Image (cartoon, rainbow over all chains, first blue to last red; front, top):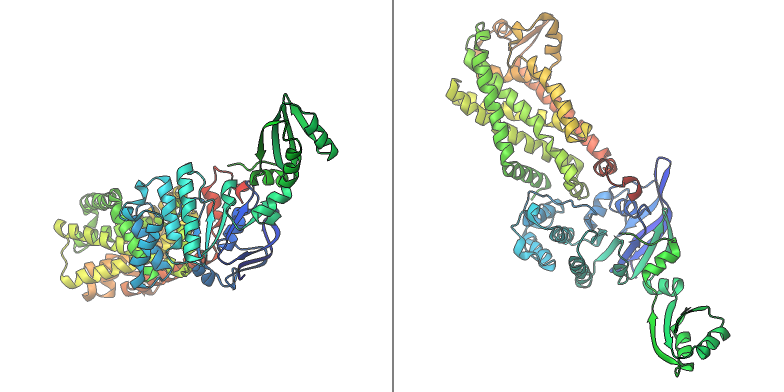
Amino acid sequence: MNKIIEVEHFTKRYGDFTAVDDISFAVDEGSIFAFLGPNGAGKTTTINTLCTILDKSEGNIQINGHDVAKEKALVRKDIGIVFQDSTLDEKMTVEENLKYHCAFYKVPKSEVAKRIDFALDLVELLDWKRAIIGSLSGGMKRRVEIARGLVHYPKVLFLDEPTTGLDPQTRANVWEYIQKLQKQKNITIFLTTHYMDEAEVCSKIVVMDHGKIIAHDTPENLKKQYTSIEIKVVCSKSEMLENALQNRSIPYHINGNTIIFQTKQSSNALEILLACKNEIIDFEVKKGTLNDVFLAITGKEIRE
Amino acid sequence: MNPIMAIVQRNLLNYVRSKGRVFGSLFMSMFMFVMFSFLMKSSMSSVNAPMNYLISGVIIMSVFQTSVNNSSDILSDISSGYMKEVMVAPILRSQISIGNILSGAVIAALQGAVTAIVGIAIGLSINALQGVLMLAVMFISAMTFSAVGLFLATVSRNSPAFQTISSMIMMPLTFVSGAYIPTTIIPAFLLPIVYINPLTYTTSIFRYIALGANKMTAAELVNEGIAFKIGSFTITPIMGLLITVLIGAVFFAVCVMKFNKADFSSVKIAKNVHGSRALQR
């Protein structure tokens, strides 16, 4: 697949402090790509450099074949950005915000009205066209920003923690728009997030910590590699089960009539459970989450 | 729409929507007007047409103050985050500067025009040609001082600093420009400051038109404090206009350079000063 973003040996220093330390990765065109990491990991620095706001210290970064440092104007045309903090024009209406954006991005005059309607329709804000931004709620503002980020039909849409600070329902909606968009327009979406459940639907995940990439894979592979399945069994007699576990040298612990053990593969678990099915009253299988992956890799929980 | 026009239109709309500001700034120039027109009349006994002399000074000062102050708009755009949206757009930095200077100049010139209309009601007497020329000079000076203001804004980086710096510079320059107090009665030891003050020359060309002074001899102009004799060299009002344009061009160039250099990371740091900025990078 075509690589829309290519980053090679990117380093960013602020004085003595190295915020991003020699990272390399590539993003497939039309995919959803997530950047995860605790606060201070270097996510925002990376996204700001990709968006041409910051200058890199070292390395080579290309978006759609254009060098981010040397061809800023061309790169800016190809990207849309939703920043962590609002960058809306508070005294203007929703429509005006999008209209001036179109002027900056030289959207053909005949297309402007149509595109504004398309973008606002996508985020379900068509009825709020003439509302002043200052009067909207936080969730609506975020949706306006997403609409604005799209109205010039970018190749890549950058979302820096697009759902932080939103209530769960709005969060789900915003996420729905993002996925809808990716399917409809085949836009590449590059996002940073704190929410692990959001990262689940991404095609690739990069985990960053202390300015370095510490994992780079699909969510499934990461879970396979870093987490195990936890099985909780309630049984009438525990002898057979304990034997089975000891034979396979799987560690376990007992809590009353409940036995808890972990295994890498669900087929293993099934085998054990089937062997002792007469003793089992009930059981529960807990799959590893990306949160567990994160915990396993960075040694800390991701915080909101 | 052209990006420059988009910025101009947006800034004008922004100004019109801040009703408090429209009234506040108009009130301020009216106030200066009344204060200086009536209180300073007595000190004008040496000049030919005291009302035209005084009122033209107040008008051009209001243009000057409005255009410098309007430049602080860009600071609120920076702190609200909107400037980031503009900075990541595929437009030239010079277009951002031109758009902001142009919109500031339009606002200041319009305000000058309103002040002039009130001036006519109070006793300013000019013909149509003078009116048109005055408007042109107001706009040119407004461009120059918007560029100066934009420069001060990019240097000061936040509103309180801008207020301090701009009033620190504006107040003294205003008072040694001849606009309120004729340069002919300013003490000799202050004259060097009068001569290096750009406002002196802006006032000079504006007053030259307002007084219809094109028939005066060079010596008469010097006597009225409209032209300036430094040693054996006389700076005429037309030269004053050129000096004004030149200063504007210099500050515009400096602003564009500053915008080109800004990667605006520092602006973000300033903004998140209470947050965990160091961690977020």
